Image (tube, rainbow, N blue to C red):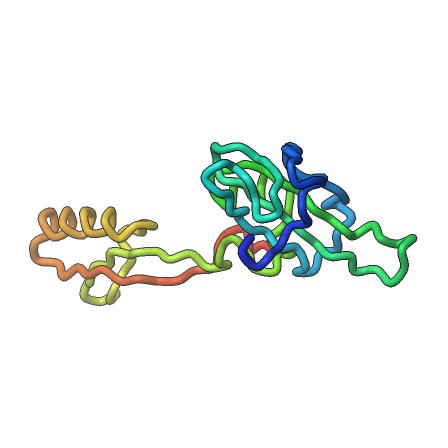
Length: 169
């Protein structure tokens, strides 16, 4: 969901310059089910959202919304909306205290990609020599292994592994 899909309610009046929007709810009362939508709010060149509320310019603005999942008005404790300015979506999630399991679309994949330099040793086969999160760093290490061990075949492979935080759940 983006702010193009999410239509904010109109600001109080046609000439209103109300600053921001009302926040409500408590993220700790939102169930640990994927119901929270976290998205970047698109602002026009003047710093207004699509409903006419003024936010100003600066860091990107993020909005977290959870619909009311209860049956009655008295139990409407899960209704939630909050705004935060952050560099990226993951930082916004951390600032708002939203858990991965609460997001409809998680910020991060549960997997991370590792670029692994392997060397072939007779008797033991291919062994992992080095692991990097970026391909560029892995290529530098691959070149270094080729220069330092000229008779040993080395290669670069890519492997998806479960993130450490996900592996403990």
